[in-house]
Image (tube, rainbow, N blue to C red; front, side, top):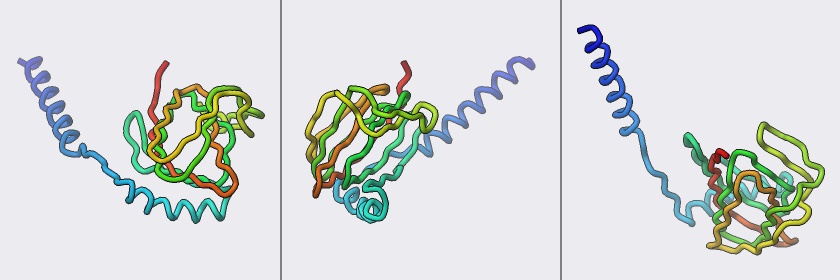
Length: 160
């Protein structure tokens, strides 16, 4: 009888936990216009800083979303545990993938940054383009003088 009560209590707790989770789950929706409006403050931050700014929009158990703006090229990056998916909203840039990071340094666990990427493949990106960069692949976003790029980023945790 005691064993049955323990099983019943466990089932009840699991049901309550699943119900709470189901009640709090929501979807997110941003229009291109909303994201570009939100990016206006990133443009101001970029102008005052190093030419780029980004912000996390929402965080989930195994991925998160960001909004990014660049008016200047970034350095080389490699995320050991996260893939990047870029959705270009406005502007023009070149995304370099592959190759080797120049002067690489570990900045956080699983995060490597450097001056640039040497080698790799260049791809011009414009509004509407989508870029997938797997975890572990060096990459760099380059912006020509006088150009800017605004993009939505989905960072997806990958296990290998």
